[in-house]
Image (cartoon, rainbow, N blue to C red; front, side):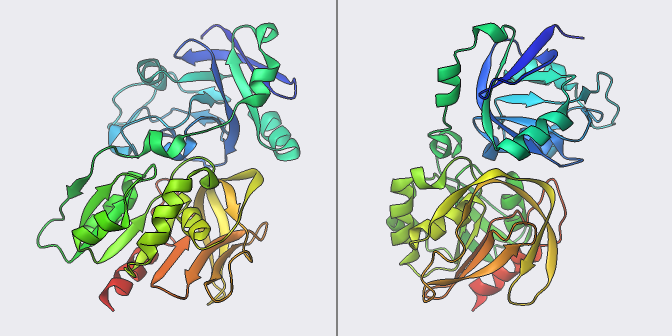
Length: 357
């Protein structure tokens, strides 16, 4: 077992555990996820940029490190907090342990933490900043309270455009704007026969028009959507192209802000694989995978511009919008899953049907 380490929260609460992974201190926004599987997808999800993730499931690492399951080339969270981590993983695809992987990737982690108590605290008090450290008495509490996740989209987006070809002849051509993309979004498009050009987050209407695409995909990503002023202005012009458009997670939020919507920060966010959402057009309820700390205010869009399409059954927050003045829709949840249920992967088919009309 590693040496003693501490998580110090901005409200002064201290949790003691054992360190593993990389050494050093890390300052982050502390959030929790309720997913029972998919820890590798969580660790490589760039939507966790600038955060320390608490896993509510008590045992993590039992199937080791499997690169084929990664959702990006990088690590999303800055810190990782668990009750137990498995030191002897067993899986025929595994290429190592979390301890070695974290040491190589610079992820500071704690085990032996009472994650139930920590999660209850976050639920009651709201998301707060924290520091993983060896010296809890030496933490600068003012700096801890002042920490903000900033510049996250530009830090996680691709820097250069590239194109991915499907097997066989391309049925559609899609421009995917990368705000911190999960790979399975790209996989879902390509396996349906799309040629996908992945663009940086700063992509403009002129650049997309020059590609002569059939559709535009707006991906997930990290941080506060409202800080991305230039990206939102670009989206306003991109919408003017009237090309079919599908937004997921941060893409959903940015698209709403480009149409005059408002966002709000949730008390502790939705992170996990069991969030129920209701389709307001059909009345059907789906179980979805989610990872977000902000939400769009459902009635903040002009009723002539767009209408709420999905709503969270637990807290009533907006989970999707259908736009009325151009062919576009968006969802807050993750139809591509990884991890989580595939109940809503049919939304990719809806996007392809929209491109066919």
